[in-house]
Amino acid sequence: MTDSVALESNTNPNSTTGSSTVLNGRTSPLGRNLPRSASGNMDGDHGMKVVESAEGQDLLESSLRLKPYEAQKYRKRALWVSWISIIITLILAVAAFTVSAMKNSVSAFGFGFDATLDVLSSIIVLWRYNNPAAVHSAYKEYIACLILGVVFILSSLCIVGKAVHDLATKVLPEVDDFLFIVSVVSGVLCLILAVLKFLLGKALTSRALITDGFNSFVGGIMGFSILISAEVFRYYDSVWFLDGTIGILIGLIILAYGIKLLIDMIPKIRQTGGYEPFE
Image 1 (cartoon, rainbow, N blue to C red):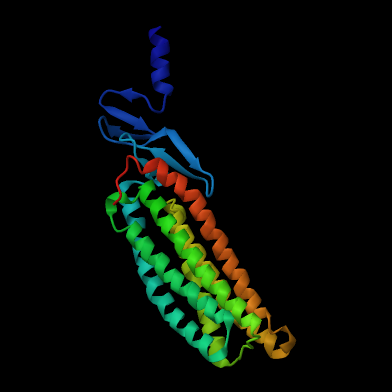
Image 2 (cartoon, one colour):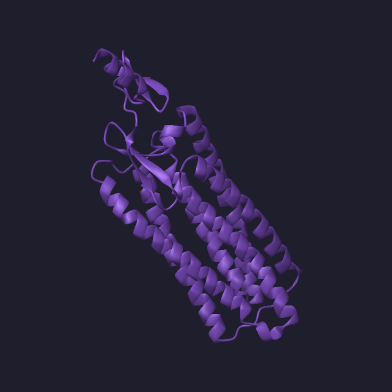
């Protein structure tokens, strides 16, 4: 009987011995509020595990993988990338709206709106990670994603509305070297920002960061689409509708992503809002 109890104590990863608790191979003094992996549940959208702490609050899976100093390191990087993204995309938005007004480009207008959306989404990420103590908070993550979903939907409606109007009135795009420069610079910078945000989002298991990265990725695609549609129109003016069609397609993609965010986040906020305070 004694041998079997001892064997069970040695093989149980969550067993308590002496004055310490072993959790996932890491030891902490008794009484600390550590996440319990046994009560975890999976976020089916990105395979991110959400675990319940000893206080009953949901924490992201990163709370099990990252040591405190590692989590804060990634949090600071997320803040830096967000600030850089705000500055770059704000400049790109102004340039894109200028091109749209001068050259009647629906793609440029769509990119300008997407760049503006990128600014807003980066501001939301700044709010998400402004509090060091909430770096693993699932509730704050859900709130950030919910706001992103609303912003995505509103922006997509504006993009699609503008594209449909220009197609209906048969607005023809104009091309020049300025448009080429804006397209290439916008595409390259947005894709670089997207990669950085995806990597940080994976490290912190943050869907808000991944969503921000998705928006930057869409911005990069739209930047190059401005160039593609303009070049096609240069040689085949019968395909004048390509610019507006791309604008509608991008708008619908953003709309679908925004709706999915709302569908996924609203139930999660209801589940966690009862015991985790809004910060």
